[in-house]
Structure formats: C-alpha cells, structure tokens
Amino acid sequence: QKEVEQDPGPLSVPEGAIVSLNCTYSNSAFQYFMWYRQYSRKGPELLMYTYSSGNKEDGRFTAQVDKSSKYISLFIRDSQPSDSATYLCAMWATSGTYKYIFGTGTRLKVLA
Amino acid sequence: GAGVSQSPRYKVAKRGQDVALRCDPISGHVSLFWYQQALGQGPEFLTYFQNEAQLDKSGLPSDRFFAERPEGSVSTLKIQRTQQEDSAVYLCASSLEGNYGYTFGSGTRLTVV
Image 1 (spheres, each protein chain N blue to C red):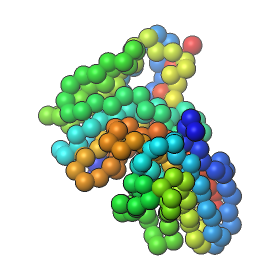
Image 2: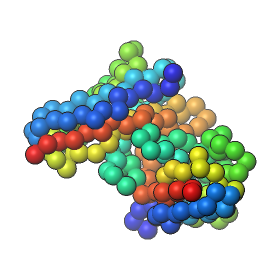
Image 3: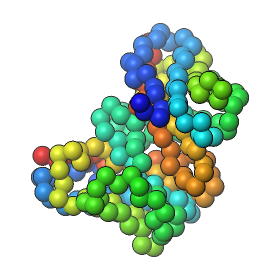
C-alpha cells in the first residue's frame, strides 16, 4: 500500500460545478499538506499548503485537512475550463527531511 | 531568474549512453530537489541539496544516478549507462530555506530507446 492514495480519475465536470478532490494517507507523521496543479508537459505548480488539521481558503480554492481520518480535500468552486489539469496532493513529515510524498494525481476535465 | 529553468526539455538517449540534465534554480533559493515522474504517476523524490551539500540522496534508484551542485546554484543530474526504465520526466525544484512549497521547473523528458 502506498503512503498516499489518490484516485487517478479522470474526473469530468461541467463548467461552474464544485469539484472535490481527495487524498488519503497512512503516515501519521505528516504535518504539511500541499496541493499542486500540473498542466500537460509542465511542472507542478503550488496551489495551496496547510499545516496540520483545518481549512484554508484562497479565492475559488479551499483545502481541508482531517488528520484524525488521515484525509485531505481540495474544493474548487465555479470550476472553469482553464482548471482542466492534473491535481497532485503532497505531504511532508518535516522531521529531518524536506522530501515530499506525492499522490499519483487526479486528472480533471472541466467541460465548457 | 524568474523561475526554475531546466535543460534540455527533451532528451532521447540510446540504451547505454550517459546523459546530463541541468537545473538552474531561482536565484537565492538555498534548497534544490530532484524528482522523477513516470507517466501517469506522481513525482518521486530522488535527492536534496542545501546549498552545495547533498543532504539526502536516498531516492536515487541506483549507483548509475549521480547529482551535484558544486557552487550551490546550478545542479546537474547525471545518469550513466541509461536503461529503458530510466525513461521519465526529471523535475527540478527549489525553495528558500524553511519555506514551505517548492517551485518546480518544467522538467526534462528523457526517453531511452
């Protein structure tokens, strides 16, 4: 079993829909949780990071972390065709390492 | 520079050839990382530098992989005697020390034929 599990999709939604992307993890030492967006043939781009449990909002994006359930989510409101990309979750344990553990990524397609 | 720059963008190597992949991090970024991303997978950690010191190389898959950052800025990832399983996108990322959230380059897509 991988440390971080993420449904690969693809996920297709109509423009304007609310999108929910999720990851589960097994390592309770993870403290920082990141969401990256990756367009085709580009490097991952940091969207949000959160520390420990709770919510964080940035524009149309909301990140949620539930450490008790080892479950994180990214919500995208009013989705746009330009949001079509692969979304990667990443996690960091902080203890003596700067290494991130990534999920496999979820492919999202927002239909106009 | 404004972002992390990687070169070449694409590299085709015959099996057994040696390759060198270059990374120019964002100016002033102390930390530099190399990741490997296979098709349809998330990035997997290879190695980490803080300035010129290689502090973690636990992800390098074999002794054919070697990375250096001699002056604490530009880094090179070298793969000797390339094999087909080395085909992947090699991503470089940098960050300020203590900053949370790397900035990635666009990667080098290596194809071994």
